[in-house]
Amino acid sequence: MTEHCPEDGAFIGDAGCTHPNHEHSALVNGIVADGKAKKLRTISEADCDAALKEGFYVDGPNGKRIGFGKSLLKHFNEDHVKKDAIGRKQRLLYAVNAVMFPAKSEDNHRSIEGRTAYFKDFDGFGIQAITSKERDTIDYVFTYIPKRNKRGGEK
Picture 1 (cartoon, rainbow, N blue to C red):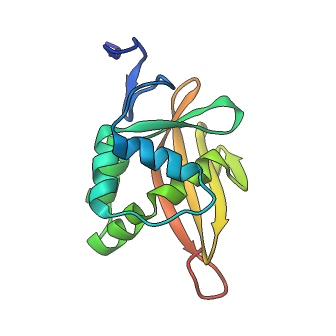
Picture 2: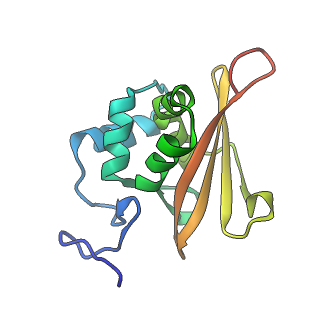
Picture 3: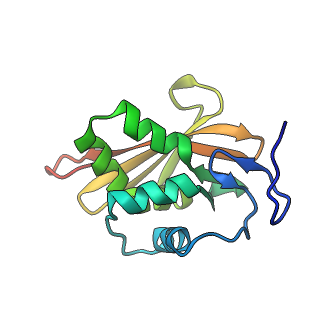
């Protein structure tokens, strides 16, 4: 059975309501707005946890809605050592920016149909955010990875 939002009737997925104008908390509104900014910053683990528990979607390339939600939080908490999980969570704004404004993307990432990888370099590191198809025009981020660059920073 498909769940629909009582506020606007849109589909409720892993990252909450998919409607572009869904009302979110001030924290999530700030994360989405700051993720669009050119000057990004790290955030606290607690803020990332709260935002992913609430869930949110952003507009990605080619009209896709891309969600950040509970399964991403579960992945970080269960599949990564604490130090790695905290480092990834602190870079949530960078992952949001990478999926909204990727330098490049790769459909069917690693030959897996429906999986897309978004890549973007930042000052001293890069982000690779990987999504999987949830519905026809909705993907959800199931992981993102800060990568080290050749100059010694993370890429």
